[in-house]
Picture 1 (tube, rainbow, N blue to C red):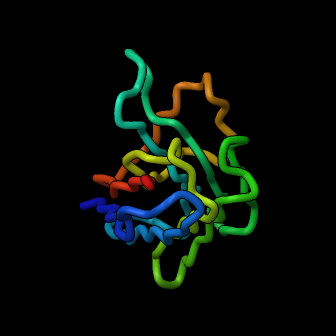
Picture 2: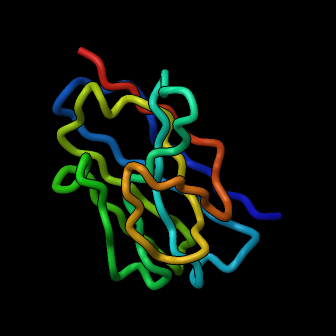
Picture 3: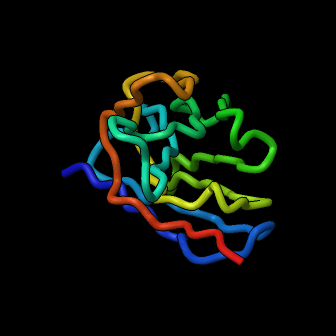
Length: 130
């Protein structure tokens, strides 16, 4: 059974940091590109997941959405089967449910793209509030 389990979310003040982890099992994690995506609390109708960052299967090439570049960093540990998202300089608009996802291929997804991963976890909530 494929399982992706996120952890590390929480409540943080603007400017703060969090580190999310995603533990994978049940499939070829080392052979899979991975991404982090999020969904805002009240997304517009028809708006799906917002892709924010991704890496290739080896975990050596990275892509970031403009909205998080320079603040968020991802890393992939194929030996431990864990995928990380380091969130720094958090903003109120970063609030949302964060998901890790396994992708069919490595790509940079634009905001208007319909991002549909192969597998997705249940998510972990990140709330940025003063």
